[in-house]
Length: 576
Image (tube, rainbow, N blue to C red; front, side):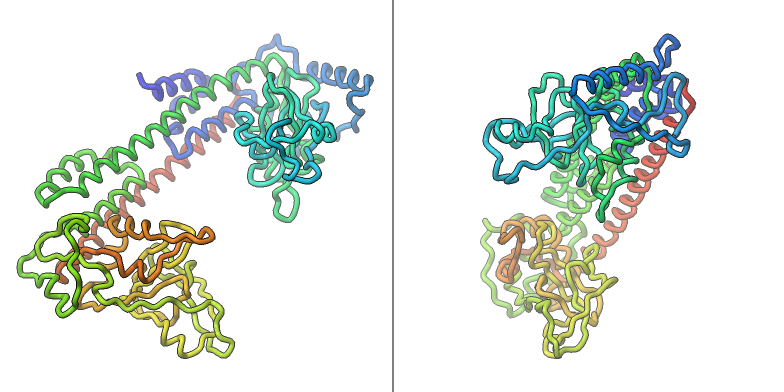
């Protein structure tokens, strides 16, 4: 039995008290973000008292709070902590759900001997040293523990000056700002000591025996939603210590806390197994798809392609079960298209050599040709087809010009110009004529931070009352030699994309290509009639891919909604 199946059975058994959950476990475990939802559900059940059975012999939470108060009084008496202000009573409006017998709602501050954010040492990063006392920041704080790879250090002297923000074993660290707000880590028992930045709060319990359950509460959706609801500041990315102190949290009997923590640890280990298996499964699936589709794209003839396709087609239900696999298939179809294997050749077609007419071009050496082409095709450098190139207009505009729409990178959507929110600049008449756009023009993305976008061919399908900015190169070629639709297709194929990627020039994080790079591209050129047949076939297959991708995405969305509903239903079901 594989690790995933063992984990599934173990999880179903461990949660057998929740019938709805157990029945639909496979759905939840395999849904998008399914394991994350499982973790959320486990914590939700834990803090609602639905993960383990209650015991009548457990001393109720009110007894635990008496112990906390007594210990807190002792700490005040010896001067270790100051006497705090009485907590505000909890109103009915603050109680989100009903608790089991023996539990009670309290404010977070009632359990604590310390709660306070860290601080930044004077001098900031300049005081970091290569070795010394660990200085913990928000990037070191994760729900499953402290991540100490790349941790910063401060000197012992700086650490002593920051004695009020010292972190010790048993503390809970809680991020209160930024994208990681709400993330919290339990400092392990064998931890020496550290200091902490102002983006992290130290939470220290009066009784060490409650800290593990408190950590679960702080990670639960109940507290995490509260964090989202009470953030402060203009950007709502900060949580004040005052508000955090007043959080209303559930408190079970101490003995039940121990049982809950043990059960959560057991279930989280099963989640780890499921998650690891899922990652391995995704990796194996991607590798299998790549291997089979690469073999398909490398077919040496139409007969070999037919055989390879038949072998793969019998397993399409397994291979094409996720959108990423459909993306890989679509790229494979492009590869087959530019190799002349997607449609049949017609001996009556005028060969590509005749299309070139009087165009002079050096022959492409055989060793430079990426693969063999069918009869009637030619390898040609794009520059040999005498393209007309024009870099785009400056985005500064001309104060004396007329208002004109200027196409930007933001106006490119799914490989097409989409002027939903156009930018209008004053442009002079000469520039309007110089940078105009006609149907069949190819805009080549000249500069961008993304390797996937630089060098991308964007075919203009209609006359646009606009010009284009200098992030593009416009390319025009005679339609009597190469159909713009086929040229766009070739520009998307791996044989050309790989070549463009090898040409990138990177400056200040931006990747660029220039006209010389594009002229040097080696492209396969079929007869013009075959170009049109290839384009028609690719468009047909792309529509099928789009339909399949949409169905898969709809199925995933439905599965995700069902999983969400399951989590909600299980979390809100009556206690056993």
